[in-house]
Image (tube, rainbow, N blue to C red; front, top):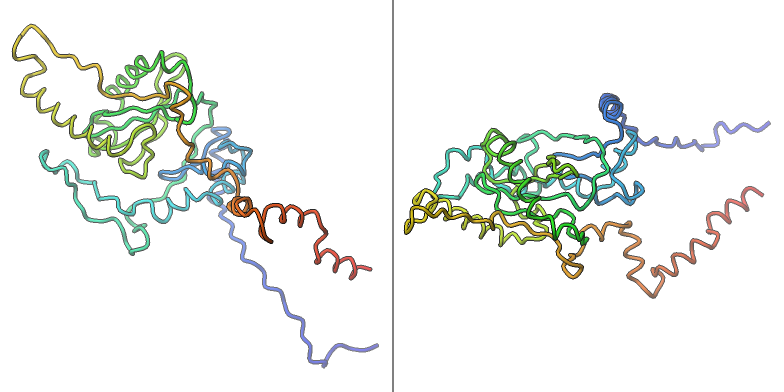
Length: 323
């Protein structure tokens, strides 16, 4: 019997990949799912909408693994963790600002040049109970100086005929909800400019969905940020005029001016107004997109599919070895 000892050959031990296990976080997510049922995950600002294609085209998560899968695959969530506050001014002490000076404190929240100072805030994982909401009844509201300046249909990639008939009534419900529930209440009134999303149900009840930053990285949907900034200036001027005239026409004390055009609400009125879906570029892995764009050559999609149908060289060699 030949011994392998002393032949100078040593078997190399395979390095095991590190396995990270977050037992406490797993338990917290599991307990939340037990209490809420199927849920939608999001971080401080973003939800992983860009990778719904890995989860049967839905944000609905029923297990801890579903949540981890979406968070790990999402570019939106990665941006939240690394660059969410890049370029955003520190607006924590906005109550001290001069009403005539809209320039906020320009001290940056950025730490290193390439990222955000993570010590300035806490990252949070939020689980929201999943509900089957009708896409036509979600709206985004833009608030400047504690006033709604604009309301937009949230799903601007589809035309819903009933909105053309009902949008003014919907606007009224949203404004009433804002006045009663959100205005001067959000962040105890310390934040003057922000964006929030709502849902209006079949009983005309308004439900708050989320808050967003007043910044151009927040999708303006059927508006442009340049328009929103102009509306902000107009709202300030109108506010000064109302204070001077007390809301009454100076030429006739018996006539009260009622402006029923503000805040402006926009919905998709017809099929021609449907806008491009910004999430359409996230419907498949980027490798598939690159392959589809190359029509010829060894990196073409056709060549890739043909290669998938052929046995690989590695499989052939493994078969020979087994024989």
